[in-house]
Length: 413
Image (tube, rainbow, N blue to C red):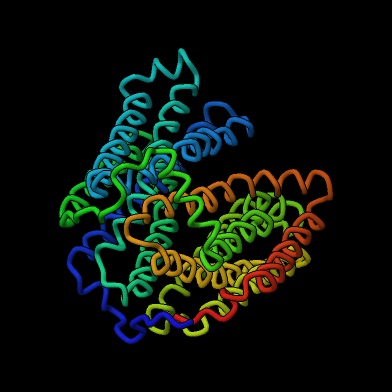
């Protein structure tokens, strides 16, 4: 079955003022969040010099995010989505301001209680992310016509990926040259700018839905919809397992040190390579969308991602390894944009919040759990065999989805 999308207007969705405000706001806020993540990580490392303390940062955000996501999806289908986005953005501002204060004016709090107060603030950020994610996913679909969903997903991805590269780099540089206070000040300012930009987007009414259903009926309806829709479920499953098994980010420091002998600078380049690939592929897809034979392209690109990771595992040359990580970013970006467009196309307006929440749980949990899987597998199997195993599992998942989800394989958009 073919679902017609506009594949010719490169700037079509950006011509819509509300979408321009939304993408600008998302870029600025993501920039602030990514900048904050680097600052928090380095600050906690300086205070503790403990690897476990660094690991607890991700856990402190992931647990509240996962625990609240389904309810947040229900809320995004019941409460005006712009209102949720503004409240969540305000919570990010509060978190940035709190980190700034405990790191400067009230340093005695950290002296007395250690890094525990920072974890509390990160927990608040995790809850905030839990509400922000489904609200954003549902709201953006109300800003552009259906035929522009693919174009909008591509620009959305480009904004996010660019912020993911520029934000951490800025955070590290500002922290290094000007200190933690200046770094958190910029995070707070950028968060405020994000709130202003989100406020500029016109509000949209909620789609009509059943008024007599309980919250449990609402949540179960969202889950049933995802698990009974072969195309959405298979697209999410591909992305989730590719990240869970195929991601090698958490063990890159070991590759940089023991295999490639590249040191900290080399690690920075290795970490940046996939993101650069994602950005470049976003730019390519803006001009030449890959929605024709979308299902086939999704399967091919996830397969290509797995192959890139396997080849990276056996590479002993730094530049070849960097090129392979760059290629993994190219392949991953195609799958991200196609998956996001599939979810927008196949989800009814009144269920977008809940479906976005389920998608967030699948993809969000796979990042954190994937890091744990990579570390555990490396411990049990050894570094190189564990990454080969992860890439091979990704290929097996692609083969399984291709066999058991024929609708995805033939999908045209």
